[in-house]
Image (tube, rainbow, N blue to C red; front, side):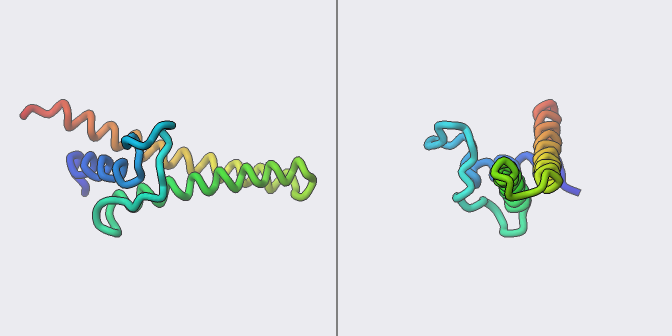
Length: 111
């Protein structure tokens, strides 16, 4: 089992690895071109992969919506793509909430 301290460190390294809150990050959005810090199969790589997948699902849903407006696809394809994007985003948010909760628990620990 991962300890809260290890989770917090992994989350911090994942943020650095994807460029969240970095000096050149004017809009606050992650820069997914930067490599994730840590071991290749580590928590940071998993988090980066999940975020990349969520963004790809969102872009696919946008393309499906545009295709529906142009009459090139069925409505069911649009609804399916939006549902997949929503599920992917909810998963990333749930992981983020758990990591924040672990960090807050660590901060409450006496030294």
